[in-house]
Image (cartoon, rainbow, N blue to C red; front, side):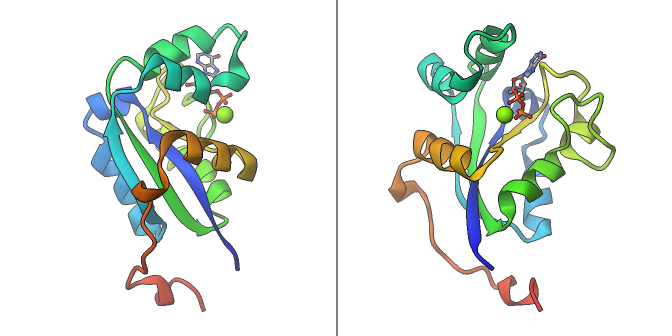
Amino acid sequence: MDKERTFVMIKPDAVQRGLIGEIVTRFEKKGIKIVGMKMIKVSRELAEKHYGVHKGKPFFEPTVNYIVSSPVVAMVLEGVNVIETVRKMMGKTDPQEAGPGTIRGDYGQFIGRNIIHGSDSKETAEFEIKLWFNKEELCDYTRIDEEWLTE
Ligand code: IDP
Ligand code: MG
């Protein structure tokens, strides 16, 4: 089983509402490995690059304004099928539609303040990890519970 990496961002509303720990804990307890993590005040340039695929859409400017409004926690997570697993754990983009038990479903109410970002494909993950992290900021290591995660 091949491991992959994904980019996750705990967005400004979640940082402001004291949800960093709750969210990180969910990934840790699932057995997903954190290989990079930092808090940053995002520049407009970085936010615009990150949401570049949405340029021209009505929510582009508001979303960039949201992301630069307060610090975020950026993370790289590693695991088998982690991109899809994280998307499932996050729930649908609109917290009103995200199911209970998902991060957006449990902690958010409105699409413009939806708590968390996670890469949506292998290609996006590769692009976003490179955009947000230097190689030296990512750690290769073994977690002691790894052998107990699989048969
Ligand atoms: P995703 O974050 O689930 O991948 P995308 O459609 O890629 O969803 O949208 C990127 C982000 O833009 C969303 O997470 C949300 O913060 C914001 N966004 C998307 N659609 C809307 C909208 O209709 N109103 C306000 N913000 C939106
Ligand atoms: Mg997206």
